[in-house]
Length: 265
Image (tube, rainbow, N blue to C red; front, side, top):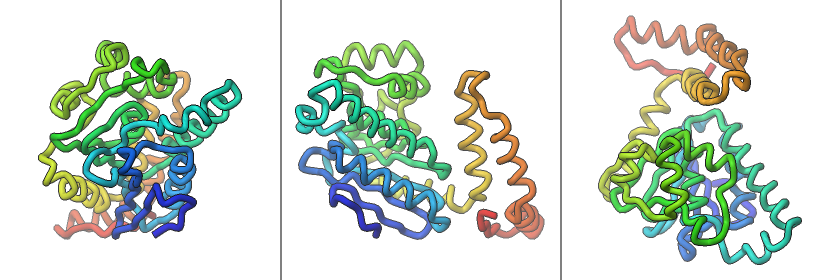
């Protein structure tokens, strides 16, 4: 277990899976300033640990994945223009850490996934929800606004029309509604959520790490405007796969009709 600056976040390593746990159940896992700092610590550690091949984030307790930002801190952290600028800078650093994570990221969602919680989930490559999950962006009921990058992520997931409906109505959506609009990849019974997520994570972990990183990086470039794409990075990551030891191992395992053992090099 990683030693963190707050007990409101937990980092655990279980074989090839790194678990990042939002541990603030008394506030339905609302994310505080201290938790944001710890998120960066966890993502940095998982990024540099070759034993971690997949990262899963989940909420502690039985009420929520993440219910949003910790509004009780807003009077202190977002009261003045200078405060809001500092808050925004820290938030951007957190988003930059998510964006820099080359390893697959899965969101295991139960209960409330609202506002900043939905933005957190949208950082994931795969989102699996239990049938009791609830989604929404209540910004319109709080007199605040989703930032540009958060809106962009939402539009990428559900399209312009649905994104507008989510933002303008500020209403909540069921897990099945979220599945229908593309907010999540799969909905399962609550009792099956962790086993389902663990199974997906282990399936990914069994595949070649360089292939997973290349796939994630290429998709990230696909959704950008053409003039903003880093095609050289895509080409380099693809070439790295074809010149890797894992490519040799994959071919041999196929010919020998056995399971490959990939080492990420």
